Amino acid sequence: MFTDVRDRQRAALTVILCVSVGAAAAAIYYPPILADQYGDLGVHVSAAAEMSAKRVILVPHFFFHLLTILLASSTGTALLSAGVALAAAAQGLTCLLLIAILGYGNQTLGLSRPVGRETALLAGFALSFVGPLSLFSYPNLYLGYPGISVAHSPTVILLRPAALALFIVTLRLLASRSWSQWTRLAAVAATLVLVGGLTKPSYNVCLAPALALMVVLPFRREGSLPKISRATCALIVFSVTAITLWQVAFTYGPGADAGVTIAPLKVMAFWNHGSRGLTVIRIGLGLVFPIFVAVAYRKAAACASDAFRLSWLAALVAIGSGCLLAETGRREMQGNLLWSMQVCLLILMTTSLAVFLSEEDAFHRGESAVVTKRTLVGAVLFLLHFMSGLIYVISGPRVS
Image (cartoon, rainbow, N blue to C red; front, side):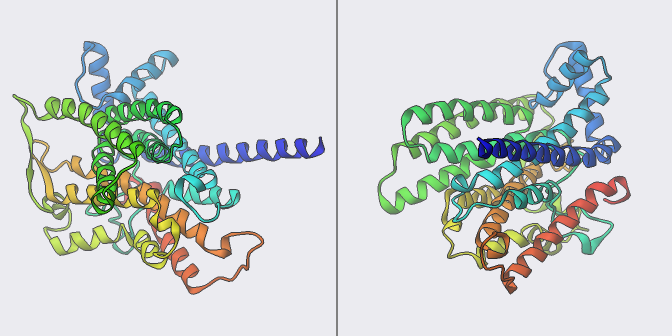
C-alpha cells in the first residue's frame, strides 16, 4: 500500500514538473510572439478577422485562424490576444510532447536504454529552443539559416505538436502487431495529417516521400514488404496527397499570381548576400549535432531504427525541396517552402538527442559515470545549438 502511495506521489510530482516546464517554455515564447518581428502574426490575425467577417476560407492552411476565431469568441478577447495565447500554448504543448517522447518513447524510438525522467525533462525544455549554430554571426541569428525554433510564425508554432504526434503515430503504425491496433492508430494518423495539413502542409509534404523511400528501399533490396508497412505507407501518402492537391490548387491554381519553379538556393542565398557557398555552410550549421550523432553512434542499433532513419529522410527531403524550389510572383522571397526545414530539423534534433542520451553512460544512474571525449563533444555541440536558439527567441526584434 505504501509503495502504491509513493508511486502515485512520484507520478503526481512528475506531472507537476512537466506542466511547469511546459508553462515556462510558453511564457518565454509569449513576448517574442507578441513582438511579431516579421509581421507574420499580424497577417494571420488580419486574415482571421476577414474570414470571421465574410465567413469564407481565405488561405489553404486555416486551422490557426479558425482556432483563433473560436478562442476569441468564447473568451470575449480580441483576435490578436487570442492568437498570441494560442501560439504560446501550442509551444508549451510542444515542450510537453518532447519531454514525453524522450522520457517514455524508448521503444518507439528504438533506443537501447530509456532516457531518465529528469534528463528527459531538461532535454525536452532545451529542444523547445534549439536552433542552428548561428551564435558566431550575432546579431544575425536567423536570416540565411535553416531556423528551427522561431517565435514569429504562429502557424509553424501550432504545427510543431501536430508534426511530432504524427511522427510518433507513424512509427507506432509501422510497429503494429495486429490489424486491430493498426486500424485504431490509422484513424489517429489520418486525423493528424488533416490537422497538420490545415495548420501548415510543411511536414506532411516531407513525411510522405520520406516514408515512401524508407519502405520502398528495403523492398527493392529484399524483394518483400510486410503488409502493415505497405498499408502504413499507403495511408500516409494517399491522405497527404489528397489534402495537398487541394491546397496546391487553392494557392497556385488558375488566376493565382504565384507558382513554383526550380531555382537552386535562390531564396536562402538572397539572405546570405547572394553567396551560395555561405548558404551551404549555414545549412550545415543547422545539422552539426545530428551529423555528429549519426557518425559517432553509427554502430548503435538506434541509428538503424525506423525513427532515426525516417527523421533523417524527412529532413533531407525538406532540405532538398527548400534548396531546389522557389515560389514565383508576389510570394517569391517569402520563403514559404523553407518552413519544412524548421519542423523536420526539430524532429531530427529530437531523435538525435534521444540516441545521444541513451547511448552515453554518463546520463544513466547506476552506470559507470565516465565522461568520455565523445560525451563532451556531443554535449558541447548540443549546448551550442540550444544557446543559439534560446538567444534568438528571447532577443526578439533586437536580432535578425
